Amino acid sequence: MMAGNAPKTCFPRDHDFGQLVKTLFPEKRLAIVQTSSEGKLQEDLANAFQEHGRVRSILIVGHSNEAGLVLTGDGLRTWSVVGNWLQKFEPEFCFLAACRAGRSEAVRDLFKRIKTLRQIYASPTVLYKNQTPPAFRTLALLQTPAPRRAPGPPALQRT
Image (cartoon, rainbow, N blue to C red; front, side, top):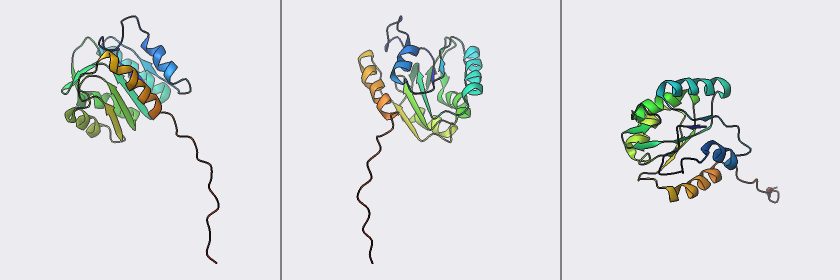
């Protein structure tokens, strides 16, 4: 799941971010939410929840700092507000492609609001365009299940 518009520092304007996400995760069921206003975001998130219910992972792309996140033209919203938007999805993992989203204030507020959250992946510093391809490759690797190991020899038993 992805919410927000790609930051100008991360992608060219004409880049279809939704298509990039689909290419990275061809086997995954995705809900892509790209929006322009907070009212529309609320509506789109409600529709995504109605269609998909609980999700394991959420990817958010937006402008941010340690105080909050900008997903729409309506301005900065605190990380607590962002957590409130996302808690109904009960995610275990949250990937934040946003500047300074990995700072302790942001992470702490999301963990407080989303009780199911186990891990957050985010940059504690400014995120530049040349850093996003490796970040998304890492995201793809983290979301790919590890190959199953072949069973070893049978365990020896004492007689």
